[in-house]
Image 1 (cartoon, rainbow, N blue to C red):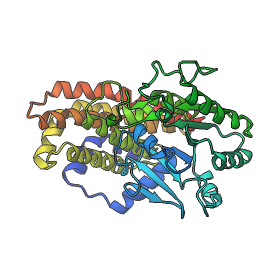
Image 2: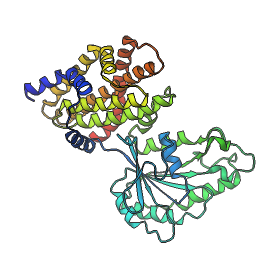
Image 3: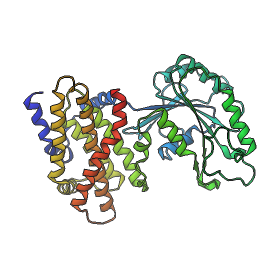
Image 4: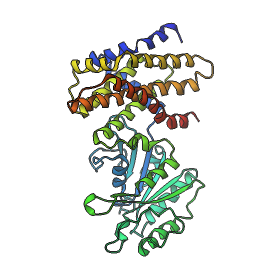
Length: 409
């Protein structure tokens, strides 16, 4: 790497200020950089298969915490009969592929299967427990696994309460991983679950098949909790697709506030985009700063704050040069690693992506504190702000760890 290129990294603070106060980045160039970054840091795709009304949309809502996952709201067609749903829409962390209801009259899923096979990272079959006729779903699963015996398969059995006796409540703790199912599970429900599981025992392929039973209801339905089995579903996804998606979508356990959770999902999306840029052989620091500027503008909108020159200047002043110098240290370190033979093309690329992503994550988390305090009319303490940045810098690296290790392996 040339000395002139190294000097670019030392100008980070000025670049970020310029991106915030005087945005002049070519939008088309930035979009092109983002497309290339996404190729380096692809969005995991969960392919949902099932009959109509099996509960696919409810699963998307539960996993993302978004009420926007409705047909016609956020879904985009990708074939004549299939749709995808990016979440969050602007900088997605995960993409869901939703096929038309299997078994519908005059619907041949062949075209959709061909397309989705080239896109998916995890196959998720959804079956309503009370629906004993799953032949159409079984047929498709057999077809897919014959062609892809190495693909893991997650099967989600839904709407458990439809087979509860009158007045029956959810069983605690969740018992559906036990073999055999315990007698505490109502007889009709137990028979239905076991019948579906038995019918698919002979599915082709050698990869793991996981079964999870969930009951995703509305609060007014009276079942507690309304997201029964969701944690088991997350554990199954993480065991089959170890990319840390739960942490990326839901944040840490202390994130309860709706604003903070929504902001977290946006931050992770921009973090992955910045990490993708960092993984490129030659990274334009202006593009990384532009990504961070877009993130901060997005967060200000979420919290209902004016993001004008006065607010930006206040934020930059509170953040201070300490954060800028820590950023420069990480960037200089990765620039040095990149020029080392072999390490520069392997470890260096991972370190580079981690640095761009982690610093973006930390900046976003610091901004949450800033905007939340301003929203509530409270003073913003500069030491607290910098402390949040330092803490979240390491947490951001952990967010990226599974994704980057999966790519490097």
